[in-house]
Image 1: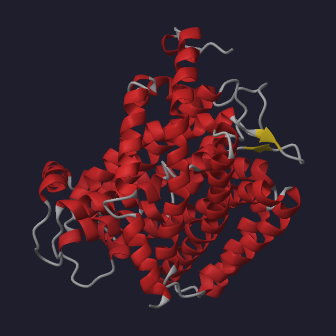
Image 2 (image 1 turned 45 degrees about the vertical axis):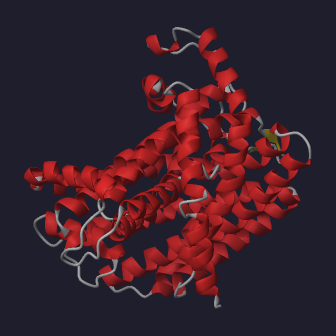
Length: 462
Protein backbone atom coordinates (compact mmCIF):
# COMPACT_ATOMS: atom_id res chain seq x y z
CA UNK A 1 0.00 0.00 0.00
CA UNK A 2 1.51 3.36 -1.03
CA UNK A 3 1.21 6.60 0.96
CA UNK A 4 -1.65 7.99 -1.13
CA UNK A 5 -3.71 4.87 -0.63
CA UNK A 6 -2.97 4.74 3.10
CA UNK A 7 -3.93 8.38 3.62
CA UNK A 8 -7.05 7.92 1.51
CA UNK A 9 -8.16 4.96 3.62
CA UNK A 10 -7.39 6.84 6.84
CA UNK A 11 -9.33 9.89 5.68
CA UNK A 12 -12.30 7.78 4.59
CA UNK A 13 -12.44 6.12 8.02
CA UNK A 14 -11.93 9.29 10.09
CA UNK A 15 -14.44 11.30 8.05
CA UNK A 16 -16.73 8.33 7.42
CA UNK A 17 -20.25 7.75 8.74
CA UNK A 18 -19.15 6.01 11.94
CA UNK A 19 -16.68 8.42 13.52
CA UNK A 20 -16.21 12.16 13.04
CA UNK A 21 -19.33 13.06 11.08
CA UNK A 22 -21.83 11.86 13.70
CA UNK A 23 -19.54 13.05 16.51
CA UNK A 24 -19.31 16.56 15.05
CA UNK A 25 -23.01 16.87 14.29
CA UNK A 26 -24.18 15.37 17.57
CA UNK A 27 -21.74 17.47 19.60
CA UNK A 28 -22.96 20.63 17.86
CA UNK A 29 -26.60 19.63 18.38
CA UNK A 30 -25.98 18.75 22.03
CA UNK A 31 -24.24 22.08 22.73
CA UNK A 32 -26.98 23.97 20.87
CA UNK A 33 -29.64 22.34 23.05
CA UNK A 34 -27.58 22.65 26.26
CA UNK A 35 -27.00 26.37 25.65
CA UNK A 36 -30.65 26.81 24.57
CA UNK A 37 -29.90 28.06 21.07
CA UNK A 38 -27.46 30.69 22.31
CA UNK A 39 -26.20 31.32 18.77
CA UNK A 40 -29.67 32.61 17.85
CA UNK A 41 -30.75 34.20 21.15
CA UNK A 42 -27.58 36.24 21.62
CA UNK A 43 -26.53 36.82 18.02
CA UNK A 44 -27.33 40.53 18.24
CA UNK A 45 -25.04 40.95 21.25
CA UNK A 46 -22.33 38.87 19.60
CA UNK A 47 -22.43 41.04 16.49
CA UNK A 48 -22.38 44.21 18.61
CA UNK A 49 -19.34 43.08 20.60
CA UNK A 50 -17.46 41.99 17.47
CA UNK A 51 -18.06 44.90 15.12
CA UNK A 52 -19.29 47.88 17.18
CA UNK A 53 -17.60 47.70 20.57
CA UNK A 54 -14.67 45.69 19.14
CA UNK A 55 -12.59 45.57 22.35
CA UNK A 56 -12.52 45.57 26.14
CA UNK A 57 -9.57 47.95 26.18
CA UNK A 58 -8.46 47.60 29.80
CA UNK A 59 -8.82 43.83 30.01
CA UNK A 60 -6.02 41.28 30.09
CA UNK A 61 -4.95 39.98 26.67
CA UNK A 62 -2.79 40.68 23.62
CA UNK A 63 -5.26 41.90 20.97
CA UNK A 64 -8.81 43.25 20.76
CA UNK A 65 -12.05 41.25 20.38
CA UNK A 66 -12.15 42.28 16.75
CA UNK A 67 -8.51 41.41 16.05
CA UNK A 68 -8.99 37.96 17.61
CA UNK A 69 -12.05 37.48 15.39
CA UNK A 70 -10.18 38.68 12.30
CA UNK A 71 -7.30 36.30 13.08
CA UNK A 72 -9.76 33.40 13.32
CA UNK A 73 -11.48 34.54 10.12
CA UNK A 74 -8.10 34.84 8.43
CA UNK A 75 -7.39 31.20 9.25
CA UNK A 76 -10.80 29.88 8.23
CA UNK A 77 -11.82 31.98 5.21
CA UNK A 78 -9.39 30.27 2.87
CA UNK A 79 -9.34 28.22 -0.31
CA UNK A 80 -11.82 25.85 1.34
CA UNK A 81 -14.44 28.55 0.78
CA UNK A 82 -13.74 28.43 -2.96
CA UNK A 83 -12.24 25.08 -4.00
CA UNK A 84 -13.54 23.17 -0.96
CA UNK A 85 -17.17 24.10 -1.60
CA UNK A 86 -16.85 23.08 -5.25
CA UNK A 87 -15.34 19.74 -4.21
CA UNK A 88 -18.19 19.11 -1.76
CA UNK A 89 -20.74 19.70 -4.55
CA UNK A 90 -18.72 17.56 -6.98
CA UNK A 91 -18.69 14.58 -4.60
CA UNK A 92 -21.96 15.05 -2.72
CA UNK A 93 -24.17 16.97 -5.14
CA UNK A 94 -25.98 20.25 -4.40
CA UNK A 95 -27.44 18.64 -1.26
CA UNK A 96 -23.99 18.86 0.33
CA UNK A 97 -24.51 22.62 0.59
CA UNK A 98 -27.45 22.12 2.96
CA UNK A 99 -25.28 20.00 5.25
CA UNK A 100 -22.57 22.65 5.16
CA UNK A 101 -25.17 25.17 6.32
CA UNK A 102 -26.44 22.81 9.01
CA UNK A 103 -22.88 22.19 10.18
CA UNK A 104 -22.36 25.94 10.33
CA UNK A 105 -25.50 26.56 12.42
CA UNK A 106 -24.78 23.95 15.08
CA UNK A 107 -21.08 24.71 14.71
CA UNK A 108 -21.70 28.18 16.13
CA UNK A 109 -22.47 26.58 19.49
CA UNK A 110 -19.35 24.43 19.15
CA UNK A 111 -17.22 27.48 18.31
CA UNK A 112 -18.72 29.37 21.26
CA UNK A 113 -17.75 26.56 23.63
CA UNK A 114 -14.22 26.27 22.22
CA UNK A 115 -13.65 30.02 22.56
CA UNK A 116 -15.14 30.12 26.06
CA UNK A 117 -12.82 27.37 27.26
CA UNK A 118 -9.87 28.89 25.40
CA UNK A 119 -10.21 32.11 27.42
CA UNK A 120 -11.26 30.36 30.62
CA UNK A 121 -8.09 28.23 30.79
CA UNK A 122 -5.57 30.57 29.14
CA UNK A 123 -2.26 31.46 30.76
CA UNK A 124 0.61 33.89 30.15
CA UNK A 125 3.79 32.43 28.64
CA UNK A 126 7.42 33.38 29.31
CA UNK A 127 7.28 36.23 26.77
CA UNK A 128 4.14 37.72 28.32
CA UNK A 129 1.79 36.49 25.56
CA UNK A 130 -1.46 34.65 26.18
CA UNK A 131 -1.56 30.94 25.47
CA UNK A 132 -4.83 29.07 25.25
CA UNK A 133 -6.82 26.55 23.26
CA UNK A 134 -7.67 22.85 23.45
CA UNK A 135 -4.22 21.80 24.65
CA UNK A 136 -4.71 23.96 27.75
CA UNK A 137 -8.36 23.30 28.51
CA UNK A 138 -7.94 19.57 27.93
CA UNK A 139 -4.94 19.38 30.26
CA UNK A 140 -6.24 21.70 32.99
CA UNK A 141 -9.97 21.12 32.66
CA UNK A 142 -9.85 17.32 32.62
CA UNK A 143 -8.02 16.11 35.70
CA UNK A 144 -5.54 13.25 35.64
CA UNK A 145 -3.51 11.66 32.86
CA UNK A 146 -6.43 11.63 30.41
CA UNK A 147 -6.37 15.41 30.14
CA UNK A 148 -2.58 15.49 29.72
CA UNK A 149 -2.71 12.88 26.96
CA UNK A 150 -5.60 14.55 25.11
CA UNK A 151 -3.96 17.98 25.35
CA UNK A 152 -0.60 16.71 24.13
CA UNK A 153 -2.21 14.75 21.29
CA UNK A 154 -4.08 17.83 20.11
CA UNK A 155 -0.99 20.05 20.24
CA UNK A 156 1.11 17.58 18.23
CA UNK A 157 -1.61 17.08 15.61
CA UNK A 158 -2.25 20.84 15.27
CA UNK A 159 1.45 21.78 15.04
CA UNK A 160 1.87 19.27 12.19
CA UNK A 161 -1.48 20.07 10.54
CA UNK A 162 -0.51 23.74 10.30
CA UNK A 163 2.03 22.83 7.62
CA UNK A 164 -0.68 21.14 5.55
CA UNK A 165 -4.07 22.85 5.83
CA UNK A 166 -2.59 26.19 6.85
CA UNK A 167 0.53 26.38 4.72
CA UNK A 168 1.43 24.16 1.75
CA UNK A 169 -2.09 23.80 0.34
CA UNK A 170 -2.68 27.54 0.58
CA UNK A 171 0.63 28.55 -1.02
CA UNK A 172 0.23 25.95 -3.75
CA UNK A 173 -3.28 27.12 -4.61
CA UNK A 174 -2.14 30.75 -4.88
CA UNK A 175 0.81 29.84 -7.13
CA UNK A 176 -1.36 27.69 -9.41
CA UNK A 177 -4.07 30.33 -9.77
CA UNK A 178 -1.63 33.16 -10.40
CA UNK A 179 0.17 31.11 -13.05
CA UNK A 180 -3.09 30.25 -14.78
CA UNK A 181 -4.46 33.81 -14.67
CA UNK A 182 -1.33 35.90 -15.29
CA UNK A 183 1.36 33.42 -16.37
CA UNK A 184 3.71 34.16 -13.45
CA UNK A 185 5.93 31.17 -12.63
CA UNK A 186 5.27 29.58 -9.19
CA UNK A 187 8.83 30.26 -8.03
CA UNK A 188 8.24 34.04 -8.23
CA UNK A 189 4.86 33.79 -6.53
CA UNK A 190 6.49 31.65 -3.87
CA UNK A 191 9.18 34.23 -3.20
CA UNK A 192 6.67 37.08 -2.92
CA UNK A 193 4.25 35.39 -0.51
CA UNK A 194 7.11 33.91 1.54
CA UNK A 195 8.72 37.32 2.08
CA UNK A 196 5.47 39.17 2.78
CA UNK A 197 4.00 36.48 5.05
CA UNK A 198 7.33 36.03 6.81
CA UNK A 199 7.51 39.72 7.72
CA UNK A 200 4.11 39.46 9.41
CA UNK A 201 4.58 36.04 11.04
CA UNK A 202 7.89 36.94 12.70
CA UNK A 203 6.12 39.80 14.49
CA UNK A 204 3.85 37.41 16.40
CA UNK A 205 0.18 37.74 17.28
CA UNK A 206 0.15 41.55 17.59
CA UNK A 207 1.54 41.88 14.06
CA UNK A 208 -0.85 39.22 12.74
CA UNK A 209 -3.79 40.89 14.49
CA UNK A 210 -3.02 44.31 13.01
CA UNK A 211 -2.64 42.98 9.48
CA UNK A 212 -5.65 40.65 9.46
CA UNK A 213 -7.94 43.25 11.03
CA UNK A 214 -7.09 45.59 8.16
CA UNK A 215 -7.44 43.35 5.11
CA UNK A 216 -9.75 40.46 6.15
CA UNK A 217 -12.90 42.65 5.92
CA UNK A 218 -11.74 43.94 2.51
CA UNK A 219 -11.16 40.47 1.10
CA UNK A 220 -14.52 39.16 2.33
CA UNK A 221 -16.46 42.18 1.05
CA UNK A 222 -14.72 41.98 -2.36
CA UNK A 223 -15.62 38.30 -2.78
CA UNK A 224 -19.18 38.66 -1.47
CA UNK A 225 -19.82 41.61 -3.81
CA UNK A 226 -18.61 39.51 -6.74
CA UNK A 227 -20.88 36.64 -5.70
CA UNK A 228 -23.78 39.03 -5.17
CA UNK A 229 -23.30 40.35 -8.69
CA UNK A 230 -23.53 36.80 -10.09
CA UNK A 231 -26.77 36.27 -8.16
CA UNK A 232 -28.13 39.63 -9.30
CA UNK A 233 -27.58 38.72 -12.96
CA UNK A 234 -29.32 35.36 -12.36
CA UNK A 235 -32.12 36.30 -9.97
CA UNK A 236 -34.70 34.09 -11.66
CA UNK A 237 -32.53 31.00 -11.03
CA UNK A 238 -32.18 31.47 -7.26
CA UNK A 239 -35.50 29.82 -6.19
CA UNK A 240 -34.84 26.68 -8.23
CA UNK A 241 -31.23 26.53 -6.96
CA UNK A 242 -32.38 26.71 -3.34
CA UNK A 243 -35.06 24.09 -4.03
CA UNK A 244 -32.44 21.78 -5.54
CA UNK A 245 -30.12 22.19 -2.55
CA UNK A 246 -32.85 21.39 -0.01
CA UNK A 247 -34.40 18.50 -1.95
CA UNK A 248 -31.10 16.83 -2.79
CA UNK A 249 -29.99 17.01 0.85
CA UNK A 250 -32.57 14.29 1.63
CA UNK A 251 -33.01 12.47 -1.68
CA UNK A 252 -29.60 12.45 -3.34
CA UNK A 253 -28.80 13.66 -6.85
CA UNK A 254 -29.47 11.71 -10.01
CA UNK A 255 -26.74 11.45 -12.63
CA UNK A 256 -26.93 13.98 -15.42
CA UNK A 257 -24.72 16.13 -17.60
CA UNK A 258 -21.18 15.94 -16.33
CA UNK A 259 -22.28 14.83 -12.84
CA UNK A 260 -22.07 11.18 -11.81
CA UNK A 261 -24.80 11.31 -9.17
CA UNK A 262 -24.59 11.14 -5.37
CA UNK A 263 -26.70 9.68 -2.58
CA UNK A 264 -27.83 11.22 0.69
CA UNK A 265 -24.91 9.66 2.58
CA UNK A 266 -22.43 11.31 0.20
CA UNK A 267 -24.19 14.67 0.56
CA UNK A 268 -23.94 14.46 4.34
CA UNK A 269 -20.36 13.15 4.38
CA UNK A 270 -18.87 15.71 2.04
CA UNK A 271 -21.05 18.57 3.23
CA UNK A 272 -19.99 18.05 6.85
CA UNK A 273 -16.33 17.33 6.03
CA UNK A 274 -15.91 20.37 3.80
CA UNK A 275 -18.02 22.51 6.13
CA UNK A 276 -15.64 21.73 8.98
CA UNK A 277 -12.64 22.24 6.68
CA UNK A 278 -14.04 25.69 5.95
CA UNK A 279 -15.21 26.96 9.37
CA UNK A 280 -13.11 24.71 11.67
CA UNK A 281 -15.90 24.36 14.27
CA UNK A 282 -14.90 21.30 16.27
CA UNK A 283 -11.21 21.49 15.40
CA UNK A 284 -10.51 23.70 18.42
CA UNK A 285 -8.51 26.36 16.60
CA UNK A 286 -11.02 29.07 17.47
CA UNK A 287 -10.10 28.64 21.12
CA UNK A 288 -6.46 29.44 20.35
CA UNK A 289 -7.30 32.76 18.67
CA UNK A 290 -9.90 33.66 21.31
CA UNK A 291 -7.39 33.18 24.13
CA UNK A 292 -5.32 36.12 22.84
CA UNK A 293 -8.23 38.58 23.13
CA UNK A 294 -8.51 41.40 25.65
CA UNK A 295 -11.77 40.50 27.33
CA UNK A 296 -13.38 40.92 30.72
CA UNK A 297 -15.12 37.53 30.64
CA UNK A 298 -14.87 34.32 28.58
CA UNK A 299 -18.53 34.65 27.54
CA UNK A 300 -17.91 37.94 25.78
CA UNK A 301 -15.10 36.68 23.55
CA UNK A 302 -16.93 33.39 22.97
CA UNK A 303 -19.91 35.32 21.60
CA UNK A 304 -17.58 37.26 19.30
CA UNK A 305 -15.86 34.08 18.14
CA UNK A 306 -19.06 32.31 17.14
CA UNK A 307 -19.79 35.05 14.57
CA UNK A 308 -16.74 33.74 12.68
CA UNK A 309 -18.58 30.50 11.85
CA UNK A 310 -21.63 32.47 10.72
CA UNK A 311 -19.56 34.71 8.41
CA UNK A 312 -17.49 31.85 7.03
CA UNK A 313 -20.19 29.27 6.33
CA UNK A 314 -23.52 31.03 6.23
CA UNK A 315 -22.20 34.01 4.24
CA UNK A 316 -19.02 33.32 2.25
CA UNK A 317 -19.67 29.61 1.56
CA UNK A 318 -23.25 30.40 0.57
CA UNK A 319 -22.17 32.80 -2.17
CA UNK A 320 -19.72 30.24 -3.59
CA UNK A 321 -22.28 27.45 -3.51
CA UNK A 322 -25.12 29.47 -5.02
CA UNK A 323 -22.98 30.78 -7.89
CA UNK A 324 -21.97 27.21 -8.77
CA UNK A 325 -25.53 25.86 -8.59
CA UNK A 326 -27.45 28.69 -10.28
CA UNK A 327 -25.05 28.82 -13.25
CA UNK A 328 -25.35 25.03 -13.73
CA UNK A 329 -21.57 24.63 -13.69
CA UNK A 330 -21.78 21.67 -11.30
CA UNK A 331 -23.84 19.62 -13.77
CA UNK A 332 -22.13 20.58 -17.02
CA UNK A 333 -18.39 20.25 -16.52
CA UNK A 334 -17.30 16.99 -18.13
CA UNK A 335 -13.89 16.08 -16.72
CA UNK A 336 -13.09 19.60 -15.54
CA UNK A 337 -11.47 19.82 -12.08
CA UNK A 338 -13.95 20.85 -9.38
CA UNK A 339 -11.47 23.38 -7.98
CA UNK A 340 -11.98 25.50 -11.11
CA UNK A 341 -15.79 25.49 -10.92
CA UNK A 342 -16.02 28.72 -8.93
CA UNK A 343 -13.98 30.69 -11.46
CA UNK A 344 -16.08 29.25 -14.29
CA UNK A 345 -19.31 30.09 -12.43
CA UNK A 346 -18.19 33.72 -12.05
CA UNK A 347 -17.21 33.81 -15.74
CA UNK A 348 -20.58 32.45 -16.84
CA UNK A 349 -22.59 34.47 -14.34
CA UNK A 350 -21.07 37.88 -15.05
CA UNK A 351 -20.68 39.84 -18.28
CA UNK A 352 -17.19 40.58 -19.58
CA UNK A 353 -13.89 38.77 -19.12
CA UNK A 354 -12.89 40.09 -15.70
CA UNK A 355 -14.86 37.72 -13.47
CA UNK A 356 -12.08 35.13 -13.07
CA UNK A 357 -9.79 37.94 -11.88
CA UNK A 358 -12.11 38.42 -8.87
CA UNK A 359 -11.75 34.75 -8.00
CA UNK A 360 -7.97 34.80 -8.45
CA UNK A 361 -7.56 37.89 -6.26
CA UNK A 362 -9.88 36.32 -3.67
CA UNK A 363 -7.82 33.11 -3.67
CA UNK A 364 -4.66 35.17 -3.06
CA UNK A 365 -6.23 37.06 -0.16
CA UNK A 366 -7.96 34.01 1.33
CA UNK A 367 -4.90 31.79 1.17
CA UNK A 368 -2.52 34.47 2.43
CA UNK A 369 -4.75 35.20 5.41
CA UNK A 370 -4.96 31.49 6.21
CA UNK A 371 -1.16 31.31 6.25
CA UNK A 372 -1.09 34.02 8.91
CA UNK A 373 -3.81 32.54 11.10
CA UNK A 374 -2.46 29.00 11.05
CA UNK A 375 1.10 30.14 11.72
CA UNK A 376 -0.20 31.45 15.05
CA UNK A 377 -2.04 28.22 15.83
CA UNK A 378 1.09 26.17 15.23
CA UNK A 379 3.13 28.72 17.18
CA UNK A 380 0.95 28.32 20.29
CA UNK A 381 0.97 24.51 20.07
CA UNK A 382 4.77 24.39 19.80
CA UNK A 383 5.08 26.77 22.76
CA UNK A 384 2.83 24.44 24.76
CA UNK A 385 4.90 21.37 23.84
CA UNK A 386 8.45 22.72 24.03
CA UNK A 387 8.37 26.13 25.64
CA UNK A 388 9.07 29.62 24.35
CA UNK A 389 12.52 28.69 22.98
CA UNK A 390 10.90 26.63 20.22
CA UNK A 391 8.66 29.42 18.89
CA UNK A 392 11.17 31.29 16.72
CA UNK A 393 12.56 28.13 15.01
CA UNK A 394 8.98 27.01 14.31
CA UNK A 395 8.12 30.37 12.73
CA UNK A 396 11.20 30.18 10.51
CA UNK A 397 10.36 26.61 9.44
CA UNK A 398 6.77 27.64 8.72
CA UNK A 399 7.97 30.50 6.50
CA UNK A 400 10.35 28.24 4.55
CA UNK A 401 7.59 25.69 3.93
CA UNK A 402 5.47 28.43 2.31
CA UNK A 403 7.98 28.56 -0.54
CA UNK A 404 8.13 24.75 -0.74
CA UNK A 405 4.35 24.54 -1.01
CA UNK A 406 4.19 27.18 -3.73
CA UNK A 407 6.79 25.48 -5.92
CA UNK A 408 6.00 21.78 -5.39
CA UNK A 409 3.35 19.60 -7.00
CA UNK A 410 1.12 18.37 -4.17
CA UNK A 411 -0.45 14.96 -4.62
CA UNK A 412 -1.03 13.91 -1.01
CA UNK A 413 -1.12 17.08 1.08
CA UNK A 414 -4.88 17.70 0.70
CA UNK A 415 -5.66 14.17 1.92
CA UNK A 416 -3.03 14.53 4.65
CA UNK A 417 -4.77 17.74 5.74
CA UNK A 418 -8.10 15.94 6.05
CA UNK A 419 -6.47 13.25 8.22
CA UNK A 420 -4.73 15.75 10.50
CA UNK A 421 -7.92 17.81 10.84
CA UNK A 422 -9.65 14.69 12.05
CA UNK A 423 -6.90 13.88 14.52
CA UNK A 424 -7.22 17.42 15.93
CA UNK A 425 -10.99 17.24 16.16
CA UNK A 426 -11.20 13.94 18.06
CA UNK A 427 -9.56 15.00 21.36
CA UNK A 428 -11.16 18.43 21.14
CA UNK A 429 -14.69 17.04 20.77
CA UNK A 430 -14.14 14.63 23.64
CA UNK A 431 -13.01 17.56 25.77
CA UNK A 432 -15.99 19.71 24.77
CA UNK A 433 -18.41 17.00 25.82
CA UNK A 434 -16.66 16.45 29.17
CA UNK A 435 -16.37 20.18 29.92
CA UNK A 436 -19.82 21.18 28.59
CA UNK A 437 -21.38 21.38 32.11
CA UNK A 438 -18.77 24.03 33.00
CA UNK A 439 -19.57 26.01 29.84
CA UNK A 440 -23.29 25.81 30.65
CA UNK A 441 -22.95 26.82 34.31
CA UNK A 442 -20.69 29.82 33.73
CA UNK A 443 -22.61 31.02 30.69
CA UNK A 444 -25.87 30.85 32.62
CA UNK A 445 -24.28 32.65 35.59
CA UNK A 446 -22.98 35.43 33.34
CA UNK A 447 -26.37 36.21 31.82
CA UNK A 448 -28.04 36.04 35.22
CA UNK A 449 -25.54 38.61 36.45
CA UNK A 450 -26.10 40.76 33.34
CA UNK A 451 -29.80 40.21 32.54
CA UNK A 452 -30.12 43.39 30.45
CA UNK A 453 -26.98 42.92 28.35
CA UNK A 454 -28.90 42.05 25.19
CA UNK A 455 -31.32 44.92 25.69
CA UNK A 456 -28.99 47.87 26.18
CA UNK A 457 -27.09 49.96 23.64
CA UNK A 458 -23.89 49.54 25.67
CA UNK A 459 -23.56 46.05 27.18
CA UNK A 460 -22.75 46.07 30.85
CA UNK A 461 -19.15 45.19 31.69
CA UNK A 462 -18.17 43.30 34.75
